[in-house]
Image (cartoon, rainbow, N blue to C red; front, top):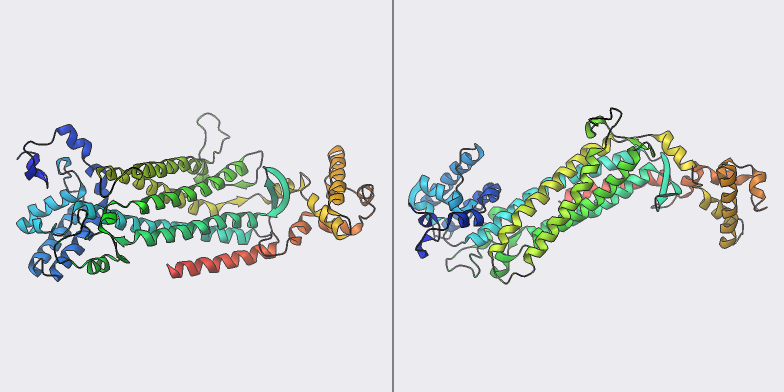
Length: 467
């Protein structure tokens, strides 16, 4: 049998496709990943066709039983994928026809590969988004619990990577958690637009058969059928939107990774990561390298690239479907896999972070992190802020010269810069006093951190319930 007659469109052509062109245009090497969703969509399509009288009940049952057998072959690794058959759709349809005869050829009635592949990708994305969300929830839960446990652990807060003011480790972790909250909301919002069904749009204009798209949408769990057939087969906004979500999420994970890498260094020595998340050196036996966060940081650029690839893919396409769209799957598949794996790594790793509390505390004592507290103290005593700023600057200069932190100076030493300073100043110059003083919603006071962790826990539970 010639290669041309193996094609669903072979009747129009007088010669077989060139072997190289067949390989170049085929997608089955990667879109076979959609096999489960393709069969799921075909079963729903056959069910609907029988309901509207296009297929008999016997034909429907024969098709569904045949598709179930084909799915079994695929799951067992017994299926023979053929490049001449181009894609996952024709491979499955051809095998179905081999098994059940001419009835298998009736399955494609009222649809096209254009709306079929668009449906398959949306089913796939819906499944993967649910898996990714579960990992994101797991990461958020672990982060919230760790923040709650470390509500009293003091560390330096930074701006410009310079010591700024003391904060708590729990407060810092909840900053990460806020990033993930926004990511979670974006993901759920993206899922709403993924869950719209293209099937029934056929090639681009709909079909003359009396199909019922609402039935098919209900069978497949879609919220609704797509409104416009031209847009339904050519839209890839949902893939771009997911990859945009993925890029923002990975940007957040990369920021976290950067801090984890710094904190595990001997220069910071803030945390320890369990050995299972690190590797050693082939030549330097003392090394313990934070490979997981480093790799997540590196994979971020990979996902950015997929976003740009998809945007570029779609930017010049006229309506409706074009072969260009075949190039959507590989970047989308890789973005899905990368996001899922990075989230899994973080969800396993973050709850296992061991803070080195003494190192964090000592680092917070360096760099005059309570200088702002001294300025605020002076303002509360009636000193104008700009004057208070000058007084504290002079105090810091003295501290640099004498190698003393503000809290280590005597009252007499401090009073040489302002007679307003009294014994009660030491209540605000301690690290504990500094963090406790920021006792308002969003502040770093331990009580506020615990309250924020509780609110985050409740909000996450509510979000899971809505989903």
